[in-house]
Image (cartoon, rainbow, N blue to C red; front, side, top):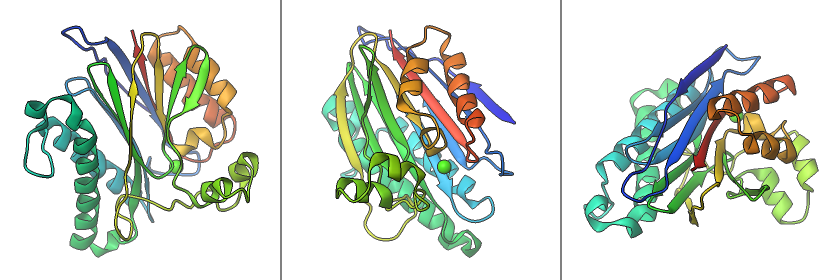
Length: 264
Ligand code: CA
């Protein structure tokens, strides 16, 4: 029950060359895969979204959010009506934040148009590469990691109730991983109230490997195994498939999605 789709990505004009692949599989107890993902080599955009909501509505939320972010980034449309391609690199943070806001509105508009979709929402993690800079934006508990010199580093902080407790010193990371409320996200596209998007930048170095993933991976597969698999010199698609299968073998009932990016 795997879905496969892969796509290469490579920069030109002195920019670092990238190789990127993704893999996704529906959870064991589910009839629909509510995760969505995307790789846009042209714009250097990589995405993973994890939808939530009754029936198959999470699938709608994650799909429309990914579509909207791809559209806004491809058009380079900024909140003030400016054009990011003309403005150059420094606007990528603004561009992604604006894209997340429009994706949030788009999910809310879908709910307004069809009330049966009420309560649906989605997490989203996006990685946008331009030159030697990667801009990371996220909402919810889909994550971005970097593997550099054998060290795996988490680049995002989950917007979940359990991670708020970890940050307050009330739960350990290990307690959070198995907590009955571990799936409660405190921020989502389509959720209530003002949307705050976390955005940050990293400088890419040759040999870096980046991973975007839904929580179907990280609730069951330990960081040490993620690091080991990401470090492998196997073709990237096999690395992605291996990560998804490891989550399934280790008892994930959830949908599992990964997008891996190598800086050559
Ligand atoms: Ca999930």
